Length: 261
Length: 245
View (cartoon, each protein chain N blue to C red):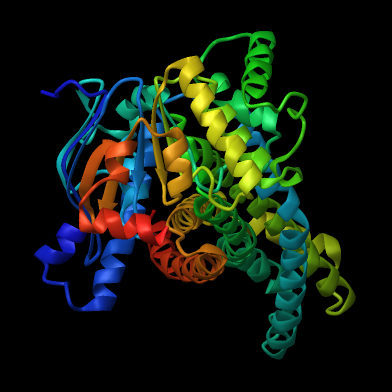
């Protein structure tokens, strides 16, 4: 990547040089992971990561979804009543949860909680030379550390999103029933009749991209740590910031893409 | 083509950013000998050592291991090389989520099809070699610095390598433990006849374990010879290093 930045005369313009190096590093790591896909998959390591990434994140993801659904219902109830459109609250809420709020908020939560954890763990291994020790024992750290985390995220993020969607809609149900006096069966029937498979597919489709971004960014930042505990702290912060921005920016382009499908 | 050495570095150059760490290093380590690389902090000793098992690649120059050029090898191809050349890291680099037994068994699990019983025996054997019998179930956090060094050595030995690379094996240890580790390196070299390369700035340790000494200064080898030749060298930099130590 250094060569590319030199070719395009980025040398000397420090921010662009750093961005090009960073993107190049992410690309090389992705290529390394793709090469490892052909090798033996470590089922035990993947399951362990699924438990750490998925099961242990359940409470934070569901709590976020529940209150998001409840807040959306409150806001919609307030504004839709003014236009006499209160009965549409359920449909709009479900659409918001399935297409946007569910996938994006779940990804942001996982990016913060899991992404930071991955960077801190791999970064600590890097500064204590455990990554070099793995390599010196002829063990590929990408295969042992990066691939299981990536695969676990690719499996668990969509599953967590489905649960978050459901809990968000249930949170909306509680508020529309008790605050807006919309009957529960009407709320649920209106959602079932209105929502199409594409709405669910559009939201879930994004989660695979988000999972990939979180895993690659978190692992790369961990593997690139230098400078001891201070470096681990900086890399962890960088992971939270970078994954959040990447999720939000890519969400725009993915939304455009999925709307055209 | 390589010459006669087991490990050969030829005109190695390596920089990190603007800092040139190795500036044309030439060094040959013969099979079965213990070569100690001496030098002050920041002289490039560890970087040179990490070239010998491909952990770091040179900008230019070559590294030959047993006649095979390893400096341009892909990471996958280096796996076989690294089974032959084990390394003991300065900070031990034991996997802290595993017990000592699991740490030592890890390379065997990865690279062999040995049964769990045989692996257990090999772990016990490796621990016995470094005087850590009965410590297999301890975690690294439960061990002293000296015990960790020995456990790291046991992990390096378990694949029965042909060469051992030691990065500052006695740094941070008290004089008694330093003496024990030096004796252990010497004994293992005699018992297993492995080729050893030891990076250190500890002159006393160097004189105990070295067959030959190389002196690295500002990224260049200033001296290579026996310990006696090193002690009587007329080279100003060597003389200064010995006087300061």
